[in-house]
Length: 221
Image (tube, rainbow, N blue to C red; front, side, top):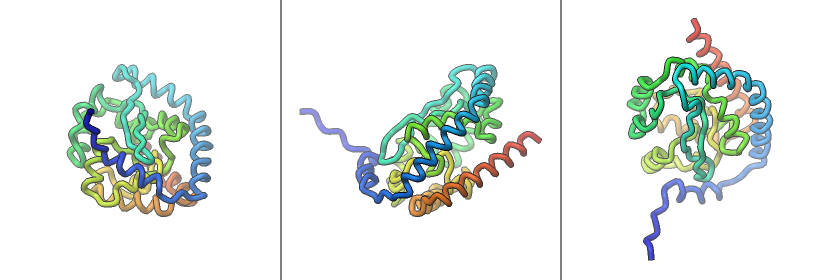
């Protein structure tokens, strides 16, 4: 008889997340996700085709990046983005977290990757993740399974991120920089999970749009 493999932290916390309170407003947020993903997806289609061509001509294949992320209730899904790093960058960046990851990632960015990130054009394929139900427009940013294991071990309450779908943007992203401590980001993620109102959802999207516009204009000058 084979030995039973130990459960990952994501799997163990998945049941807790499933048992967490579901709210009527969650259905409204999901309806907003579907509506906005369909509308923005159609609007973004010409930009997606152009971005695909630019990535292909400047750094070759693959055009898309697909990486495993932990979603609601511990569900592991493939998150898609237009590739902004050199091929196989994730295999070189895999062991790192925090400031060191940020520094090493900067060295892997392609010639157009920085601009695609500033304009968030690399995020367009995630509209598909939203339509599939893997993600929401607003929520904690999705994280790799291995990093989830580490952070859930170190930060009490980190598992609560599994109560909601991860987001294209979130309170931590509009209030803190990429270099902020994980504990600081978690505090804002937990605020979203506790509130997750339609008003906060729309306000977070509006703030994100304004930040993207400023960053894009700043890089173009």
